[in-house]
Amino acid sequence: MIDSHAHLDDERFDGDRDEVVARAREAGIERIVCPGIDLATSRKVVELAHRYDEVLAAVGIQPQHADSWDDAALAEIERLAADGRCVAIGEIGLDYARSKVPRPRQQEVFEAQLGLARRLDLPVIVHCREAFDDCLAIFGGEFGHGQDARATQGEFGHGQDARATRAAVRGVMHCFSGTVPTALRCCDLGLMVSFSGTVTYPGSGELRAAAKTIPAEHLLVETDCPYLPPQPIRGQRNEPARIVHTVEALADVLELSVEDVQRVTTANAQILFGLPVEEGEASIVYPIRDSLYVNLTNRCTNECVFCPRSTNPRVKGHWLRMAEGSEPSADDVIRAIGDPTRYDEIVFCGFGEPTLRLPVMLQVAEWVKSKGGRTRLNTNGQGDLIAKQPIAPLLKGRIDAVSVSLNTADAAQYAEMSRSAFGERTYEGVLDFVRMAMRCGIRVTVTALDYPGVDTGAVERMAKELGVEFRLRTYKQLG
Image 1: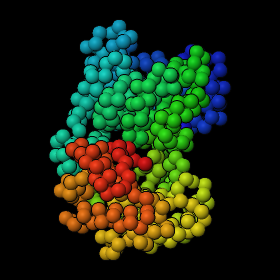
Image 2: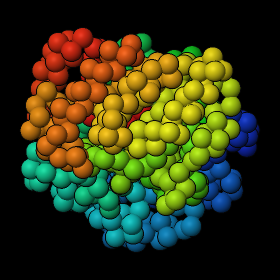
Image 3: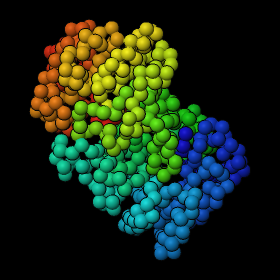
Image 4: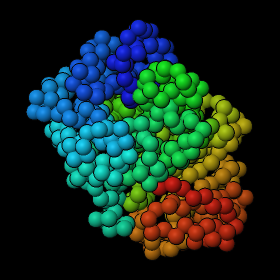
């Protein structure tokens, strides 16, 4: 795990700082990012980063100390930021709740430090209290990316997520305290959103709702220690080892395992702070919750406008991009699965269309069933068109359930969204597959994405008419 925000320089740690870091190490905390809030603390966190292998520094002037900003402060922050143990500019931002510094001065200092971060190509750690409108407006204006890509490129006219147009924007909204719409605005501006022990408090329902809404690729965790102890130790001094309580709370909210949240937030922090990310070979199988997913191929017959396959081939922290010519054999997959009964189900999904490798999928599925496991196929429903024959009879007895990405009840909109290799006949071909799978006794679910412009209610009504189940998927939530 990575604690993305901890004030280990605080005097409350002066008596046992070595022990605090040792406890963090024992708890599995591999990195602790310590931000400065003024020049003195910025110098101290850099010193701590050289003292402890686990500690990394961030340097900056917090809004409560914005009145200390001048050319000399800028030069000193820039000097400290050049240290190899410094990974960010922060914490910086706006505080209309506690800071006595006039708001125009806070805004000026925030903008100046954003400019420094951009010039040095470092991410920012943003502090914001009761100032989200101004804070996000300044952040968006500084980087010139305040609009969602869809707003300028047509409703369905571009296959990349807004993040792809903002590749240079890196930052985190630390210790998030806003609403669901505010969290989504942060994500639209390219910011990650970090949750602290406050998400564990009984009265923090709105925070938990925000955590549930944002894409996993934007999620970070922090302690903000010695402040904000999580509920089980409320009233005590907080420290990095206690981050496990926040991770457990988020796992419960997101309906993920603790290991899922650890993996996702660690990968996100590594990416944000420019730390080494072990990508290596693509995962053949990857666990999420209590299911095991099989990554058979990255190839697909669709080029969906909303798919991040080409820009961000990572799902819940798992790296899925395959090198050319490296698709796994049936034996490779079987070895990777091991005992299939350890999982609720084995899901053929990955980052491509599994039915493009139908013979391998059927061989593995038959083996899973012979060992007492359950199977599911996540598909775009174009298997009949790919195989040039109905494939549902071949799935019978091998695949227990099929989830089909129908996405819309309108054939023209489907063509515009999916950009299938099979052209105009695709939509009816998908519906034919759904009908045949149902007749073969396979449990069928059609899904739709809450993508802008899609009438998900119409898809649900179509599912009812077809006699199959319906599930609504959340846009930007993979896995």
